[in-house]
Amino acid sequence: MKYLKKIVIASVIFIAVGAIAYFAYLFPFYEPETSDFSTSIEKLLSADYLTALIPLFIIIGLTAAGIVLVIVLRKALAKADKKQSRFADARTGRHRGNVPKQKPVWFMILRWTIMIVFAFIAIWGGLIFGMGISALSVPVLSCPWNTEEMTSSSCYYLSHLNELFELPWQSILIFFASTIGFILLLGRAICGFLCPVGLMQDIMDKNRQKTKTEGIKLNEKMYGAVTPARWALVLVFIGLCFAGGNFCNFCPAVAVSPVLAGMSTSLYISGFLMVLILMAGFFKRRAFCMVCPLGTIMGFFHKISLFRIKKDTQSCTECGACYEACPMGIKMIYTEREKVNVTSANCIMCGECIRCCPEDKALSMTCAGIKLYTSSRKKIMSGYEPDKTGRYAK
Image (cartoon, rainbow, N blue to C red):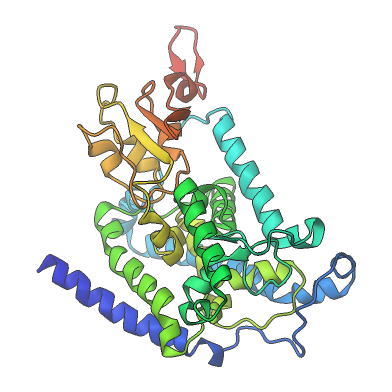
């Protein structure tokens, strides 16, 4: 009965989202007078580039307005309902206690550096470095609408299978070899290290922290409720082409990469979705990653990916810090008491669980068996300073 309910919910979501995706082209979010798909270094330095950025400015403005509106409504509801406001901190994930601010961790600095560099390459790499490897396909990094991309994006042909098998067999082989190769090599580390949409969500989360805005904390039941939506989006992503639809009119990534590259493109429901994703990413870190169809497909291969999250069950004290820190709500990482490999299909390899683990070597990230990053009590305590009695306080 439990699985039947999820199947029914997923089916309803699939029909609703599929219908919206199919007719997405009828609802333009932004439509320039003339579509200009040409990009060049000269264009990026001209006034025409600002014109191409208009839809992005609109998205940023609507996102900011939406965030302010949500904050105002939350404060108004808490003020109107005193009983409800008593438990507001527990519901939203805001903690009144002193939380130590750790010193910068080398792993996080490296991850942010890689995300920024690859986002830059994904958008402007073709213009700067040429398109010598454009025949290769990778799961992310490029948007198919950006004709000056440095590489080809897997997402286009995975959502347009009918077009994929019309290509010469050599191109089909290159597509599958490069796509599967990248997935097997990196797994969902692609989501945590390379995905431009993931970078934007992380930036929104940092903005929330800097503005000291209350986030939204999901519980285990809420995370479970996301599952039907995730599978429904996978079905829409793969199956829409057979109904004659175009997932690119529905994809939120289209609203960013081509525009930043200087392409005057028309945006449909993808523009509205990007506003919602940025708003959701502000209040809940990596909100879109929980339902991303491409990320879900890459998660299928997590058992044969070179990247692993491993756990020393003897060192674990079951404090739950890893679960609290995980943006994907993966609970098994702290409940598992037997297996060493605790890698989940939903894990994006962001390393937050390891960063927040207070026990030495209880959690670690490995690549091909080599440890890249391990938990450390010393790093956790770096946010505290000893007082006159020798005890640690913030």
